[in-house]
Picture 1 (tube, helix red, strand yellow):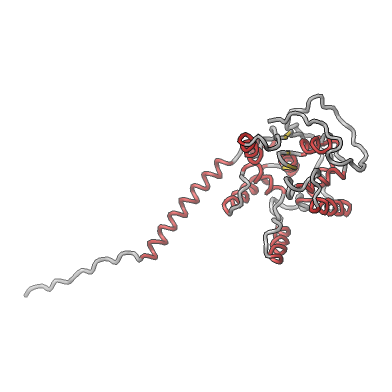
Picture 2 (cartoon, rainbow, N blue to C red):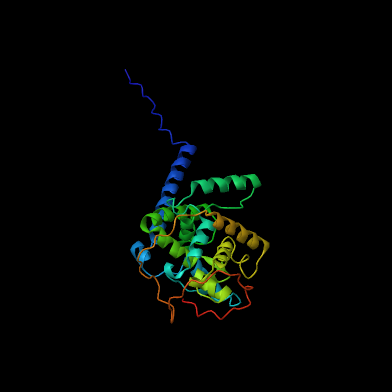
Length: 291
């Protein structure tokens, strides 16, 4: 009696959807690995950043490259100084203007993000961001001005690590030395000399408020242009300063100077705040920028 042969059905190939999911997961894993390698490459020497000289930020390097290709752009002005060489009203004004809970959060201000979300939703456009000083510093130091989700992801990770590696005092010092205060003007020392011909140590409360008011849009809104937006921002920051929005001071402790001292620099006593002249009326040539 002959055995009946049974047909063996071939194994079913994975469906198209399953194959696509598998390829998609593999691609996602590759992207994550490449992104992790990129973040590792971005990481600075945190110990050197905590105590060493203020480095050129990514934004400063980009501006310098742009000016090399277009000499009609304003000269780069950047002269970093230690936090102790910056007037206390300036330190306070920038916190009031940009991150009133700077001393309370660990890199991210959830309340500010929620307020920004509701504000933007109400107006159906992206009007305000809600980024903290730490986030802005991470972006300025290491990233580019481009707006994309991947850059924001990098900013989040860098902020988390930076908050654990640097003190609040150091974060504020770095921020004040690399923030943009006008076309080609980076850092509060360069801004003070450009707009008023004085050092950052000599800034009055009103001048500090005006510099802080430039931060949302320094190229267009600054003490030289005095736009309506700028003037309204100055009034708003002034009200918050008088209301005591920020009460936590920067801890005063012995610090290591993070930059070379200015030529012939001597301690300058605080001056009594008084109405400043028009922005361009008493300018003196700023010293050569430290590049």
